[in-house]
Length: 123
Image (cartoon, rainbow, N blue to C red):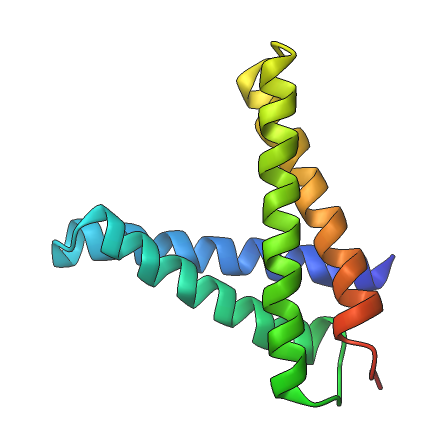
């Protein structure tokens, strides 16, 4: 349970920093919303990898292989999130409830796949 808590705390932190970058780029620097989004999400994804590797899973595996696996897990988890969201919306589930449920699917899949397949070499 402690491992899952660390994983979730990294997710919250990288989300806060990612959104701070997005809004800072848009409103303080004047960049376009698309470029701001790219910068925020790429920073958040990079931070997520680094913190999960060191803090959450305390891995000592090959960083390059883990990064490739981490990106693969991100794609799988995101597509699962999107599929869940579309499915729930097609069932006329409330939009906010659908977003939260899809987010929970994303977190669960991401945690499990990262734990089992990506960060196998932990201290």
